[in-house]
Length: 236
Ligand code: DX5
Ligand code: ZN
Image (cartoon, rainbow, N blue to C red; front, side):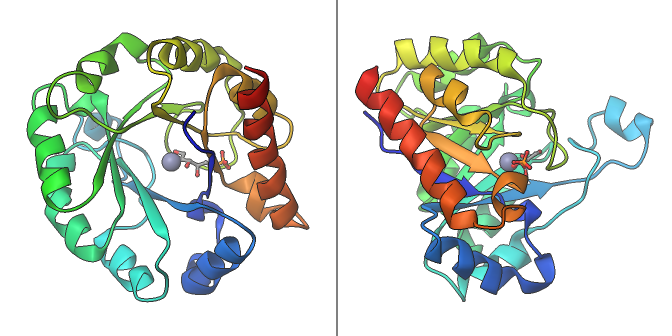
């Protein structure tokens, strides 16, 4: 069974105090820190032409580089950008640990992407939006250079604090049946009220932003998420 990884999404943290927020999450028992990299479109035209992937602009490699100076934690970088290949080198240098790109924008060059990501010492992952069928990631899990994690989005990418989409659990279940040892990450709307369904479907890497940062006791939420994954694994 792949081990549970609880990954607070730093998108919900106080960006002005990123280093102390990161240290705070690690002290509460977080395994990974989830970093949402978004390229921000400003017009429908830019969206239609796929110039940009999401309507929000967040952080880039310079921020990862600064944060890396303050923590040894695994930085689980989720790149919601249209041209991930352009970012591999800088993220590698900046100290990213995982580099997860979107399948929707990587159909033609994922093999090259995976190769480059590994050559920069990062762990390759692939993410898919709610409207993308799970079958689209299968080729990336086969062959000589497979990705090592699949991130199933459980909200539309772009913002924290959205509502969890339970329909996405079919994708997680299908993937878990086919790949018992794979790291399967769920991202969007996870918290105490949605973790059980995600854990039962077979997710082991849990991203949680607003539910952790918004809690009075973030450490308790992190423990509860981990416990739920552990218990589902035992009973499944
Ligand atoms: C959304 C991001 C998520 C987001 C999750 O595009 O990929 O990582 O921060 O935040 P919550 O847990 O608040 O839905
Ligand atoms: Zn994310």
